Image: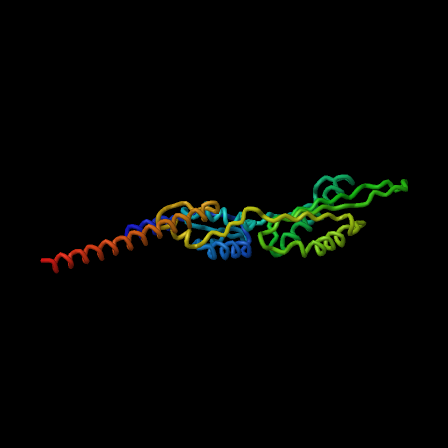
Length: 247
């Protein structure tokens, strides 16, 4: 009963995990957290935005879990956001804005691929001299960080084609794609989270393995005590019977 009251107390107090998110992203976040044994709710905000709330005891582990999945997603500026009317500009400024806008659009598209956690696109559009015979070609570099197990390597040719078809004057050979796998996956077992809620133990990605070692050790000790007690009881009863026969 004491453990149950403690668990209810820990889960009763809610904290806002993230705010001002789209409903789609909030739903994805809730699905991830619930699959990991964390109770959470979404609450409406302003201008069709939503928030995610979790129990105070689950706040830190929820942040770690979502970070391992690349949530919340980075917000990208659209071309309409970059080229707002009424802003002072020059040919140089317009060029910088255009390069930035194209990079943002490409990053948003690549980040929407399954398994992609982070996407960055760096575009180089040299300003060639029309009177010069030497033409400096355009180039682009793409960095992709993906979740463990995601087959992003197979998608590299498609990523290159996407970038080439989005930038004028860019050829396939001048696009570099660097792919790296996240080295900090967090797949916390729901059992560990339940153990944390009951006993008030903080369980993180680095301590899940230790958690199983501790639980396994405690289980072994319990079995050892039970077996030892049974053996002791058996020997005691046997000795008592022998004493009764002797008398």
